Image (cartoon, rainbow, N blue to C red; front, top):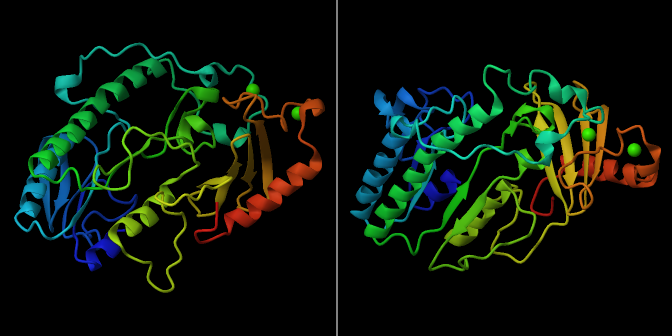
Amino acid sequence: MQRYLHEAGYTTALLGKYLNHWPKENPPPYFDRFSVGKLYKDRVFHVDGRMKEIKGYAPDYLASRASRLLRKFETDDERPWFMLLAPSNPHVPSTPAPRHKDVHIPRWRGSPAAKEKDLSDKPPMLYRGNIIPSKATPRRVLYGKMARNLLAADQLVNQVDRTMRSLGERSNTLAFFVSDSGYTLGEHGLLKKNKPYPVVSRVPLYMRWPRGPVEEGVRDRRLVANIDILPTVLEAAGLSPVDGHTIDGRSLQSTQARSRMLVEAFASSGAHFWASLIRDDEQYTEYYQLDGETRAFTEYYDVLRDPWRLTNTLGDDDPRNDPDPQTVRGLSTQLEADRDCAGSDCP
Ligand SMILES: [Ca+2]
Ligand SMILES: [Ca+2]
């Protein structure tokens, strides 16, 4: 995205986290201005070519640098800009800003998924190193830390919004609010990310463009994904993909809707760990051996009857509720094709 926009004359900025394993001393490509770094207290950031120790709470620094940069961009108001603002909140260790450390947070109640008792239908490979927190850090404590930690992200969004408003940039700016992967806090007896369950894969995706074609207050029930953001931005900017660059996803401005979604996770080797096909009424997941191909475990959920994924009907030792074998074969063949698919016709 930053390359397309940079080459189209946009000023581009990145504030916060960049890719995992990216060497911090390497400037992030196609960003004109940047502060690359993560987490919370007294952290070293790569700021436009120089390493700097940022004293205090880093998300506050990112908020004020975002405002400073927006004011700077305003001095060349004809030139459009792109800003990727990526604070780490609420990523562990979920340190709250000092001003929020004692804020009252309502007690975490969890969902039916957090109360799943019988886990015998679940894939054993998901549970390696990912079991619920020990008694030393009960999940309600972790939840409280994360919720307090997110207050600084709320304030960051507010501050940037106020700055945009004061500069007259708010009404004609396309803005997205999205999240990293969700995080289990004991749902299905699990901790952390990379699970095929909705508590992890269903993250917020908000879009705003007051003077554009985005209607205020409307909830769009289509299945959409992070891969749709780039095509949406290209369409908004009036840009086309360059020859030979295959782009997954489709513009959210279009009326197209996918009938199924592919969600996938990879092992550190790069091979598939699992892949999942999600429709409004069913979810089918395959877990793979180390080769990333050979099936090691399968899950099937009747989403309408079991929205919280409590009973994997292929793994509950009850043949009466199994989907018929032909359906499973069809889902497996579809999933195999979807895993290798590229381009905007893919799920
Ligand atoms: Ca169960
Ligand atoms: Ca069954």
